[in-house]
Image (cartoon, rainbow, N blue to C red; front, side):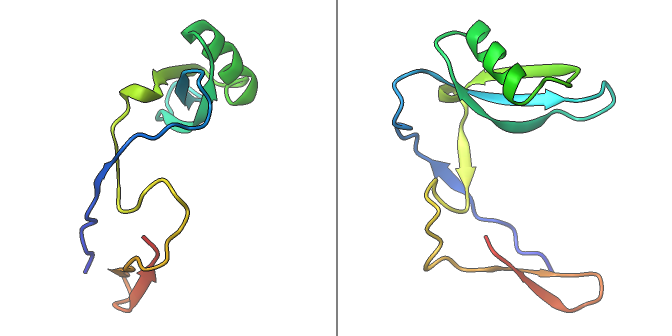
Length: 103
């Protein structure tokens, strides 16, 4: 049995850098799905594309940029890495034995 994740909106916080943040998605080959690979700080989309291409997309067929402020984040945890006190979710594998997965 798989327990559905209970996610809540993660309030945006300042990332410690006043420069606009951009979320980066790439597709290496035309048949691949887009996948999130990271973020960059840049004053414009053109500058963000240049940074993203050097860091993440030098071999990608497609690079997509999204202003981080336009992204709604939902999570079972906040943006911090502190997981103390969180409940583990249980996922029952195909062999019928429960397997504990960290949230």
